[in-house]
Image (tube, rainbow, N blue to C red):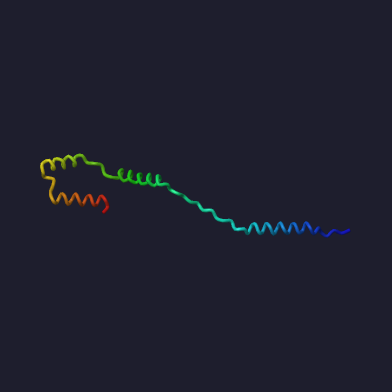
Length: 96
């Protein structure tokens, strides 16, 4: 007696192979990352920028302040030239 194969098993193997091929061709949707920044975090970031700007600002020179106070007291500080100079420095410091 000769057995040339069992038809049922061959068909099962063919179906398994077809299923594996179709599963490998299946398109898997791509996941993307996202980040949401809260208003509080934005506010904290702005505060940090302000802190850095303050740290970068030059220190107050007490000798210059005292000299200016003395000129104000004597009435020699205020003049058109001084007012213009102060206004220009304020505009420059504000980046305008």
